Image 1 (cartoon, one colour):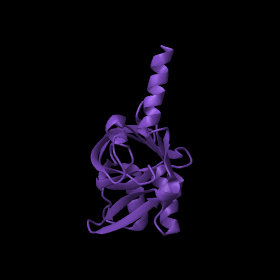
Image 2: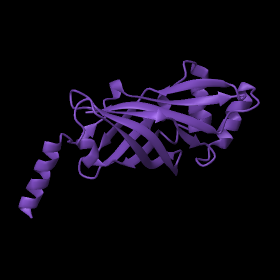
Image 3: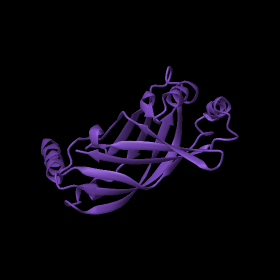
Length: 189
């Protein structure tokens, strides 16, 4: 048993994948809001963290909801208060399983299309979510993971429609889309 454990540990070390941590300074996660069917606004989350567990392949991304930034402070305050309820829910979390064998086989400069099937927990509600991504092994051994198409949050499944209604009312809008596109570009090292 001890030999098996040592062999597994050596194999993981040789694969180039040790516990990978997100480089938050080089990673971004965005959502887009579509208002009155024609105005799109980009929101960025300034505090995003994550890791890929080298034993299980479980990838986690944690988003600090109060770090939302649209460039307009009153809009951000309203999002925190009426949509995300950051007094009660500090973070959103996305969890997915990564095929470590195929990702660890990538050499510097190589890319691989990866479908990330996981679950997004937002405001206490966990809902399946899928992202189509491109994974690239960088020259320093890091992994770049970027969406090639947005994933979509169905606001109603996360029980956020009342918050959207409040935001719509405060802004004097006819509507705000209940389907929210999500894109990201993250680096794991």
